Length: 213
Image (cartoon, rainbow, N blue to C red; front, side, top):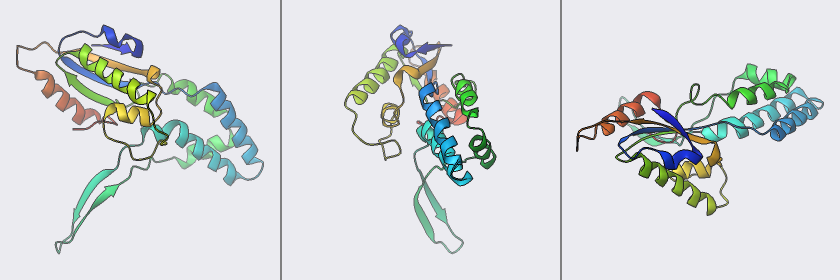
């Protein structure tokens, strides 16, 4: 297998296979400098204000785009009561991390530099899929993302969005040019479609953020 950038999608092989989408987590230097400035200004007021600025920055630039869709749950008690509903994903924030960044917001620079190269080795895939024709399927993803982005509504990240990889990417304001996809061709006999089995297994051991079946 190998990786294709956003601009190389059209060169994907035309045979069957599986694929996994990832995104480079890029935070602009201007955003980082603004965060550092805001935290320093907040610290002149109180440690609480500085920590709050750090939490807001971590959520906006790192955690929020990766927040999972709500899970549907069902609970049963001993006397047969039943409860059902949705539970929301709340990314855990390390108190010690927040404390360090509140005292030394310049640490954001190193964090941002490392996060640019974190995918795919240190990140979960955004989506895992399979295709009878990798080029056709990946081009469909790309076209859908571009269409949705060009007709994007004013809804903000965190609002309820439709399931589906393209919908998630656009609603969460991912920059498509930061996306890349790892592909692996599957050599199969006519009609066997082993790529279905492989996709099924990969989804269950890799926990893609925007697609689980």
